[in-house]
Image (cartoon, rainbow over all chains, first blue to last red; front, side, top):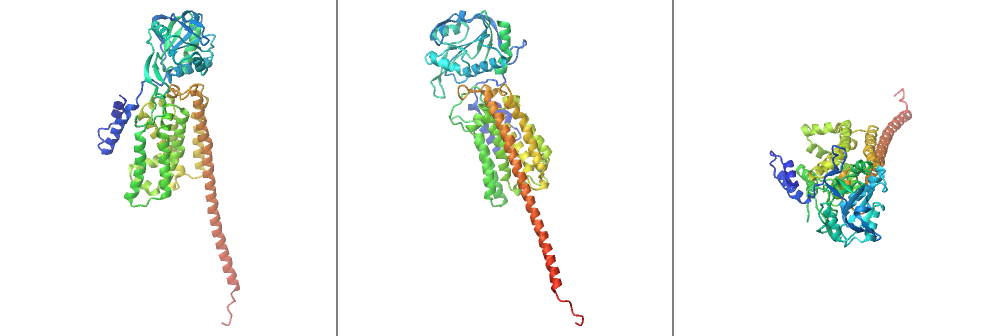
Length: 224
Length: 299
C-alpha cells in the first residue's frame, strides 16, 4: 500500500530520464517492506462530548473472575474494584510496545492531572501466566507506578474474563524479534469502569498523555 | 534482509538491532561524490585533495546520520537522536559541503546568466537566507508536521532534504568570501549567526520545557528500554538543540570573528609596513640627497 502511494506521489509523467525511472523503481522497490501497522501518531480525536475515550455501545460489567495479587491473595475482580472508577488493562510484562506505552502514559498523566490512586484504580491483568510470575509483574509495574494493581491467574480464567468483555483471548503471534520468547496478541485497549463496575469507555492504543489528561479528571468527577 | 528507501517512523514496529539498509542514502551519497568527481573530469580540472576531503566528510556526515541505525532511531524512536540528526545536517554536513566546493564548480553548476543562478543569488542574500532557514527550522519541528511527514519514507526524505537545503542556503552568505556572491562580513556576519542562534532557542525551549511529549511518533514508539520516558528524551533533545544552537554556534561566531580580526590586523600590519617602507625609502633618499656634494659653481 505504502509503496503504491509513494510511487504515485513521486511519479511525474513528463520525466523520462533513465535515472529518474531507476530512482522511482528503487523507491517502489524499497518502500514496501518498511510499512507497519497503521497507528496514528496524532492521538485520539475528541468526541462531541469532549471525551477522548470511545463510548461503549453495549452494556458490559466488570468480569466475574477470581485472580491473584502479587502476594498470592485471591482477588474477586467484580467486587474488589467497586466503589472507585477503574481502568482495566490486559497485557503481559514481555510486551514490547502496547503495554509499556499505555501504562507509562496513564502513570504520567495521573501525576500531571493530579488524579490519585485513591480516586482511580489501575489494574493490569497478565495474559501470559507462563512467564509473568507475581514477582515479575510487581517489578514490571514498578517501572510505571508501584500503586498499579497487578493480577495474574490461570489462562482459562483470564480468557473467560476477556470473553465476558467480548474481547479475544491471548494469541501467540510468533517469536519476538528481540529474541525474548514469543509475542502475544492481546486486546490493545484500556477499559474504563465506573464505581458501580459498569464499563463505559475504552481507550485504544494510540491514546497519548494529552488524551488521558483530558479524560482522567472527568472519570474521577463523573464516574465516582 | 529488510530494505527501505529512507528512514521513517513505522509506528508499532519494535526496535531491533537488525540492519536495515536505506537505499536512498547510498544513492544520494554516490550521486554527491560521483557528481563532484565527474564535474572535475568534465571540466578538465585536477581534484584539490583538501577540498575533496571536506566534500567527502560532508557526505559521510549525511550518511552516518541518515543510514541505519541513527537514521531509524532518530526518525522513529528517540527525539534526542532526531535533533542530533538535524544538528549534524545543519552544523556539520552543510558547512563541510560548502567548504569543499571550489568556486569554479559553483559557476559551472550555476552558470552566470542562468535562472538557477538568479534563484541562488536571491535565496542566499542574508535576510532571505535567515528567513528561509528559520522558516524551515520552525516549520519542520511543528508536531503536526513531524507526526504527519515522518511516518512516510517520502515525507521523511523531504524533511531531510529541506533541512540540508536550508542549512546550505543559511551557511552560504557566512562562508562566501566574495561580496558579489552574497558574502557578508563582520560585524554583520556575527549578527547574522547570532540572530539564528537566538531564534533556535525558541523551538529548543518548547522541547525542554513542555510538560507533555510534543511528538506522538516518539511518544507512541515502542520503548527501547523499560521505564523509558519520552518527556526526558524530549528534554534532552531540547537541551541538545540549545547547546549546539547556542553555545557551539557562538563558538563558531567567536572563531569567525577572531579570524576576521586577525585578517584585519594582518592587513593593517602589511599596510603599515608598506607605509613604513615607503617612509624609510623617502628618508634614505633625502639622506642620500643631503650627502651628495653640492655641484660646484665653477663646474
